[in-house]
Structure formats: structure tokens, C-alpha cells
Image (cartoon, rainbow over all chains, first blue to last red; front, side, top):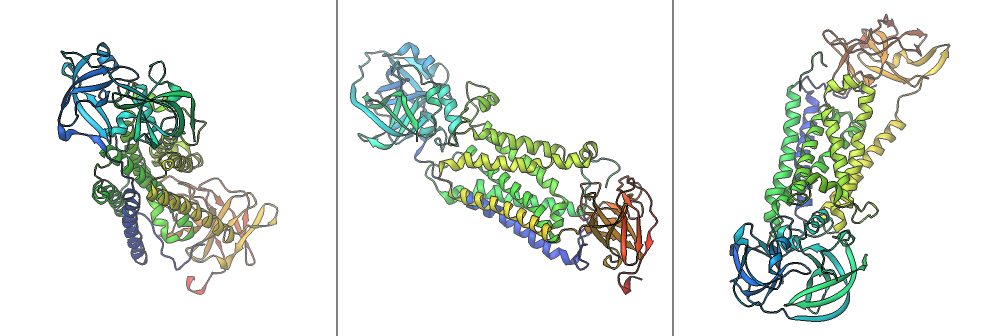
Length: 252
Length: 355
Ligand code: FES
């Protein structure tokens, strides 16, 4: 039996007087509890790091030597205010797409590209603009790329897609972002290994396979996890590249 | 109560309820999306779409937590019953907030790809054998589907159509949805180990839901309805006449497992099923208002002598034959068909001011 003294609430009748203060208190508590929860979750979000699109420098026009393998890169010969000549940068398309099919005629040749730069520390990528002006042939002699082998290494860290890592998404790493990164890699956006300990001062390594083909499902399954992997490291036109040995990759 | 189905039977209490709920949700989202970026002051802020997805996801989780707390709170303290009254609006709102989270994620993480969005969602990450790296999005999708089913069937039309027992069983899906959301968060964002506030708030929320449910179960065990004792063939002693006060009910559990509620109206006793035909609300914890037993959950009313809702409503509950043996109230174990009239039985008044 309900207690005779308790107020009895019937939804379609005015609330009993003795309940009104209680209900007002509960309502106030709810209206405060929601933003309190919001505060606890929102103000403790991690800083996504120094990455992002450089819209502040506008559309860039860069000329340089295209290299297709392991993923398309541009070794800049004529730079801009933002990208100096001599740098090597990664290339990707708009969305979760690489640009291999758009630059396939230029392997080892000069081209002039237009697009927006994304950067994170010494990692740079050009998001090549759509349309004819995105990729144009350039006159001149293409310099050959210096390759400096650094030997075989075992390194730990995370396999990411270079575009989100460079700031297309902030944050663009980790488990929450795993499926997105996997889709980028399926779309042949260049993958990047983020080493937990720098090697020869380098933290980011463009990942490639020994045969020069895009990485396969066996590696894509490890995206976003904390992994260990072995491979040959070299600097190609100054860009750190890891030719990964897929057999050695394991999640920790 | 309804004779004709209209989308929502509004009344002032529902307006207040929804206004409080909307204010709370709006405050949550406003803080997350518009205040927190300035407080965080990151040099390069979190991408807007990701922030939106996080805001709506966290809000849906907190709403579900509150929704799941209302039931046990109302068991523990009847003053919380008004929160139960319009809980379905809360649930429907939670579904739309969760849906917005899903759209923000699909439109960002699973778009601009060579693969179609929904195919990408289901086929990209297939590491079901991993804890870290598990396709936690699937758990979120499952929870969203559950909430969608609950929201779609939340109207009384569906309760009538499916029958209250099936409807109630279906609405236990809320627990499956919450469990899936727990998995979705624990195997997803918490795996990155840097969402401190979320980890703490998430742990406290889960613990609160579990603690309140346990406390409600323990209270029901301690102070649950007493069992009737078998008297003669087919009759059971439900209570003593003087335990039933004017305008109130007294509940007993019969040997059949059914609960009977004995009421006193104008000094005479009547017995009806304790289960409201709306959502099985405990009629014995209701009151007699305007000569009608009024359910404590949503206010459906029944004539205590025949278990029928007043015209033009059509709800009915079973009645029970009863007789008095000295001070004992005897109930026939088998109920009468819903809506059967039973002559009220005069019995010793419960107290002098009720005569
Ligand atoms: S009125 Fe809804 S359960 Fe009784």
C-alpha cells in the first residue's frame, strides 16, 4: 500500500503542492547535471596537436620531381613562401583518395602542382586540387633524388594515414579514428608510421612495401593500434621512408 | 488513457517535462560545442564535425543513463514517479540525439571514400577477434537500432497492437542498447586512453545505473508484497480487513504468482488485478480518486467493482471474488475475466474516520 502521507502525482492533474518544490529541485538538478557532464567530458579532450590545413597561405603552386613509388611524392624545385625548394612532400587528392592515377605519367619527371598544404611538424602533404590546374607538365630537367640508406630498424608506434595525421582531421590518429584511416589507406592515401621514439631525429616515416605496391589488407588491419614493425629506412630526397616488412608487424 | 490515437495527448505537466528535458540537453550541447573550444584553447582546435559528433554521442550516453536511473529511483522513492510519467519523450529524444551522432560520424569518418558509406561502415574494420581495434562502431549501430525500435513503438498504439506483455518485453531492449553503448565507448574512444573526463564520467554513470538497480531490487526483496496464504480450496487469505484503508489498496501475491490489489471504497472492499492494463503499473500503489482506482504511473483509471475504465475508455483489468472470514480477507485464486462486476463486500472499517 502506498503511504497515505505521500503526495500522489497524476500526470494530467496539477502536481500536488507538496511535490512541487521537490520536482522543481529535481528539474534544476537535471538542468545543471547535463552541462556538468558536458564540462567533464569536453574540457578534458586531448589537444589534437600541431596539424592542419594551411588555408592561411592559400593555394600553393609547386614545381618539382614526381616519384610514384612507394606513394606519390613531390621533390620541390620551385617552392613557395611555405614550401622551400629541396623539400620532399607527400601528395594526396581531395577526400580519402590518393593521386597515383593523376600523376602516373610523371614518374621521375617535372610537374607543376596546385593545392593546399597540410602539415604537422616536418611532415607535409599537398592536397592536389581537382581539375586541370591541379597537375600540369613542367619544362626542364628533373633532378635525380638523393637516396640515403639508414639501415634496418625495428620501431614501435602507430600506422596512420598521412593525410588525417597531417591535419585533415584533428585528431586524425588512434582507435576512434581507425576506420577512417583504414578507408584513407584503401583509397591509397600515403600511409605514415609515427614512431614513438625518433630515429635519427625523424618521427614520421612514409610507409612502403618492397615491391612498390600500395600496402595491403594485412597492414591496414594494424592501423590505429600500437605496433612494432621492422623494415629498411632511408631518406629519399630528405623524406624518411620505411620499407616495411609485413611479416614482422605485431600489435603490442 | 485513450480511445482514439493521436500523436501526443499533451497536458501542462508534459509541457513542463519536455521543457526541462530540452533545456538540459540544449545546455549540454551548447557547452560542449560553443564553450569548451575556448576553454581548451588549442592552437589548432579539434575539427568541428568531430566535436559535434562527440557532443551528441556523449549527450546520448548521459540521456540513456538518466533514463535508466528513473525506474529504480521511482521504486526507491515514489516522489520520483513524475519522472517516469513522460519518460518515453526522453527516450525518443535520446534516439534523435544518438542518430545525430551517427550521422556526424558517417558523414565524416565514413564519407569522401571510394566505398559507399554504409558498406564502408560494415566492411572496413573486421577485426572482431581483437579487443583493441574491435569494430566498436557496430555496437553503436546496434544500440541505435534498438533505440529506433523503442522510439518507433513508444506510442500507446503499439502497446495495444503488440499487447502489453510483448511491448514490455520489447522495451527491455533499452538494457541491450545501454550494454552495447557501454561496449561502444569502452572499445572505442576509451581505448586511446586520453579521454580522462569521459573515462571518469562514464565509469560513474555505469556504476550509478547498476547501484540504483541493485538498491531497488533489494528494497523490493525487503519490503516486497507479502504472499497470500492458502485458506480453503481455491481461496487464499490476502490480508486483514483493517489493513486496507479507505481510498487505498493492499497488494498480495497469490499462489498463482499473480498480484491482487484489495481496495476499500466507501467502507467496502473490492479486489482487482494489481497489473495496470497500460504498462503493468502497480495499481495497488495507486489511489482512489473520484471513485476510480488511479494508476501511479500514467494515471489510467478503473472502477474498482468491475475493473473497467470509465466511458469512453475501454481498458479493463481482471477482478477477483472476495469474502470476509472474521478479520481475514479471502480472495478466490482464479481471477474473473477482465471487466467482470463483483459486489463489494462490507468489512470492518480500517479506521474510524472512514465511516
Ligand atoms: S497508467 Fe501506465 S501503467 Fe498504469
